[in-house]
Amino acid sequence: MSDATPPVVSISRYRAHEGEAVTLRGWLVQKRSSGKIAFLQLRDGTGVVQAVASRQDLSPEAWGEVERVTQESTIRAVGTVRADRRAPGGFELLLSDFRVDHLTHDFPITPKEHGVAFLMENRHLWLRSSRQRAALRVRSEIEQGIHDFYHERDFVRIDSPILTPAACEGTSTLFATDYFGDKAYLSQSGQLYLEPALSAFGKVYCFGPTFRAEKSKTRRHLMEFWMVEPEVAFLEFEGLCELAEEFVAALVARVLDRCREELKVLERDLAPLEAIQRPFPRITYTEAVARLNERGNPIRWGDDFGGDEETLLSEGLDRPLLVSRFPASFKAFYMEPDPEDPRVVLGLDMIAPEGYGEIIGGSQRIHDHDLLAERIRAHDLPVEAFQWYLDVRKYGSCPHAGFGMGLERFVAWICRLDHLRETIPYPRMLYKIYP
Image (cartoon, rainbow, N blue to C red):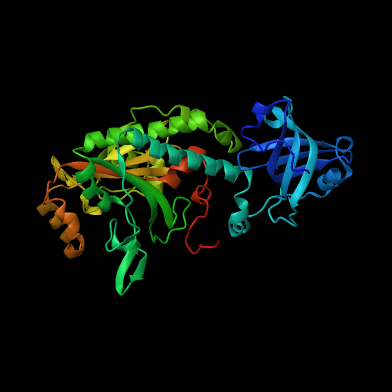
């Protein structure tokens, strides 16, 4: 292969070069050969293309490379782009030259069935499979959609710290570490650090990894996950519900617009996603308990929802469900009490349809200094650790609200994946930190 080879193009753009000679660089997915002609599936990170190699059209050296190439070998292919409706994607590459840059031996993940444990041990290689690539492309599109949504609405991104001196969601699920003789924790949420920033910018959000040391092995839990959290000054509870609905509807529409090929690879039925339209149904926690009791669930008023309750509440719904006004007894210390019933807080959970559980949790925040201090003490939290947080209520306090959305649960719902482990490149699960 000479230095005067045709220009390198990506598979995502090669169709624009119909009738032209191009160079592709990437990896071999699979090969079928009859001895005189071979069909190669090539991947470059942007897509997959079928290349056709004919023994009579190639030099003996190039044909020899076609014969020896193996699954996941790194290759360089030169050929002419040709339209062919029988080929995957409607185009194929007629090879005029071919070279193996790196020959792979015994790639461990073959087209046969493999167990989940084996695939998780080889997660660094499993990423190359078509379903994993599709799911992570959807995740990437959703991440970009998150940033675009808030940027277009004049939110300022605030990067909250990962190491924190105090808990946000409860002390029982903290990862602790030594911080030069003091104790620090991996962040459960960026919310507490967002709230001071909204007094500077009005509308803010953060997006990053968060950590929960929950000893849970369910398909809905990870030890490390990514969360997006907006906080808005002067936003009260009804406005918060509207923002959550608008946000989810916008992300679903974006994925339907830009990720249909990936959803096809994942065999995702699009009809349920196409039905996601505002407004979403809304009920209170009290109404939810009554509904669950009617359906045979023994939950009592004052009990928190688990996965079974969330699944039961979402049955028969074609859109996410907003549940509001939960008992203050099991909600976070910073949630504003309902002025009409102080037993409950102005909090919301958004439950995805199809059994995927809570995807958003949020509330109006307490903006009264004395009430917040009282709630901190009631939750047996050290007031001195939250003095900076209380300061926000001393200097220009205002009503405000926000929520958090776990990215992995959202991706699992959109892609209809069975487990969160396929929604993040390297999942951290109970007793699982390799690779």
